Length: 248
Ligand SMILES: Nc1ncnc2c1ncn2[C@@H]1O[C@H](COP(=O)(O)OP(=O)(O)OP(=O)(O)O)[C@@H](O)[C@H]1O
Image 1 (spheres, rainbow, N blue to C red):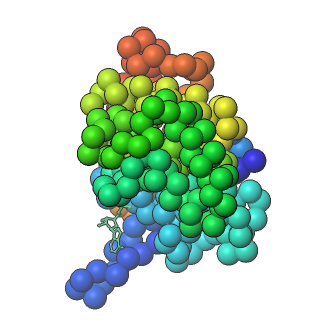
Image 2 (cartoon, rainbow, N blue to C red):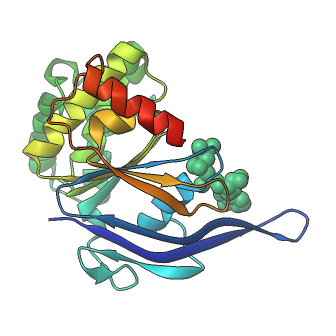
Image 3 (tube, rainbow, N blue to C red):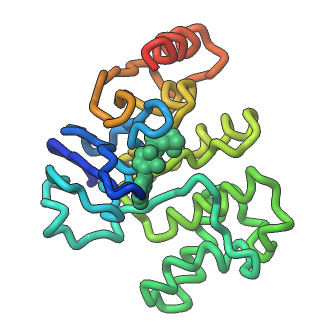
């Protein structure tokens, strides 16, 4: 089970001129267990900063985060969450399997279990045949699947993603959307992600949180009640996407 609550989160970053850049202002966010929430907003509105605060990578200056009902300052089960970045960050000198194994090595998982979990997870993302292949031998979509497998191998319940598919071609991106939704359902995961792509938000999320330009405040929460799977070519997705673009 995984849920996230952010209460009244504000953040300032130091500026080169000695001043302070106000990036987030009193943001509330609620991500219930098994939901899919998208954070959208203009460039610089603090989307990644908010995600990094939820992940514990950046400290808020004001406000609090609770994870599975526990204040993040007291939270210890960080392995229950995983983070997918915009670039796949695969290590070029490691095979697909060795890249996927990374999180398990860090956790000192015994070798036989590691091997089994890596094989299982590569199978899950449709790369069972590519365990021994190096990143440079893989297509963009396949690399993205390896990055997804690396995120999933520790069996997280909360998947955080910062524009993870934005560098993929549209067709491959659509495939990855279907894939990530299938796996989230299978693994009973909760998802919180950042995107600048209105269609991506509409295809994946139950709720879209719109941040205002800097300092980011929640300007709108929009429920997307369309049934899954959502076809990006359908009229319903098209209408929701246009409505969201207008709000953006
Ligand atoms: N560590 C940091 N130190 C100083 N300023 C930062 C830092 N991280 C982010 N910023 C600034 O904070 C603002 C918000 O950045 P953030 O990356 O959260 O926005 P974003 O909405 O995700 O933008 P984009 O859509 O362009 O990725 C930007 O102006 C950025 O330059």
